[in-house]
Image (cartoon, rainbow, N blue to C red; front, side, top):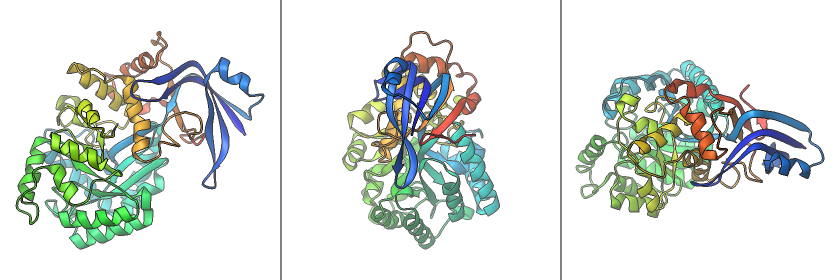
Length: 434
């Protein structure tokens, strides 16, 4: 069985190259994947080149007038922080105490958690996000509801909070360890061991759960070096803990407890020194860059600073883009891409293009999740996972960069509209957003 999809197609290949077919065609064919019916890309290109290769199609999906591209991977977000996305932000730690922790407390109620999960993941899908790395609350049922409603390829973890946390969100070391190990056993490679950060999770709990997670081939995720005052607070805590007296950096703490490997995703990683970058590189740890969350306070971010993607790439550290809901104010990865380009442009940093932003919102995330061979873009043999948006009328040069710029920049002063721009979402060749 074959389907023909017609429309303008963007297919990101790397940081500098994105195929663009204005009068494009994509043929997808039916294939069994792990016992389930799916559709994979058989060919993509111009209508003139592709359509003569096939005699007939079982279905034609006419998306002419639309811009087709792969679905997004959001590599760091907190689904339980949806209600605090636009709360006042002047300092990371203050914002957590004042708004975030009280919001997450509500998820102890099962009915509330179930209803919020259903609402959030339906909306997330409609923004074009079909995978990524997600943080839940401390509650087991909230994590289960997240897995129940999330459509696509997600790794999800319940945050571990055993110290320096409000009483209503603090777990004992024993309970945190038992729950994390239980959920890792249950979800295996879909699970992400998630110490909130070194401030809130004690080293013994991190070490024991990391060891267990690795046995299950689970992912690991946490926060690293988001703000200078966070870093200083971490150091002030650990210099008094047995075995950590001589630790010189935030990154070294995570290395010492066994949190770093090729399945680890560190959120932010803005303020890192050379030694820390070397550790991340040697351990093959990835970074999730969250430009809308790190943006200046006047742009509804936390003002954490600008991520130096060039130095991270110099050390061959994998990285991808992320929304960091609720530090980031909007769910859409289009807003994240806009912010990445705009912030670097303002600082006169070259190389932060829309083509790069699209690649880091699709292929790069799939690769970090070890899915790059079968997902992430629209090359032959990969799953037919794609979205469509209205083709930008102002695009005239017919290049991927210009088309993306025309589409994204149209809404730069109406950022709340990014969340509602996607016209259709397809997973494995089937429409799923209706």
